[in-house]
Image (tube, rainbow, N blue to C red; front, side):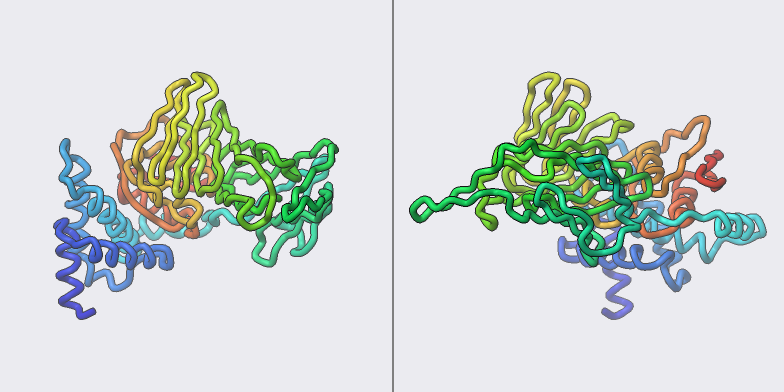
Length: 396
């Protein structure tokens, strides 16, 4: 694309006049660039765009009534603005105080989270998964537990079920042996993916615990979650021939019942709302306290606060951004932002109070060092962040 065309496209994007295809083109480019680079290159070429973009973002955020096309361009404009903020920090800040801050941050910087988890077997023995070699890890109740070359944990059923011929049909009966449970736990600063005995895939976010049976017995497939996880549940009978029942996720007074679907559950104890977001299929969310339930369709999210269960339309990409190694902040407040950063970098923000920044918008890779994220926050909030070990001191 020629330079003049790029400028025209950015002008249209800034003014909210992009077509849908143009919007996607701009957002994909900058999302990719922010994920791959600590700052945008050739900042002089973008200086004017940065200034006008910043003004546009704050103008829209501070309006009491938002234009109809706000959803498409304002949140994405903040992606550009966040990238420009990084570039601004790297190339335009002058003076010894800035250089000193960068030097201190470099010496005390913190790496992003990684694939770290502990697996606890039914007998209580533990396996530190990030330290374990790839290959077979254990056998439990005729289930082979393997760490794949890409690091994910895979449960593979080896067949303790008896198979009987019944005409042209086959039915499988499970033994009466009581089934044991395994637990996988990710610490703050960790995440992990596993494949359950029924073939379902689960991605665990930081500071999360999943408890599940070593094998499913043909009835309800029930797992227990604390923290956050993304699930991809397929109809078992389609590919495995098993007569398995609904998949159920239990967490903090809520049950999510599914057959075959993709969804995300955010059930952290320090979050005020328990959120379930549906990407594919259909689920029923049941509140155990009030006996209320909501059926979700793709693009909807249920919100459970105490006895109140509601649902709304949401941007599903924002809800599962963590799985795609991104922080996407869309209409979130500063405390919520900081809690997400705390879990991923295993740090604690220390402050007497936080300013009321209102709703904030932006996107940045979770693969960046903590200093890169803090630099962007400083530019957007006016606060100062000082790293001291695993504590981050917040100063106004």
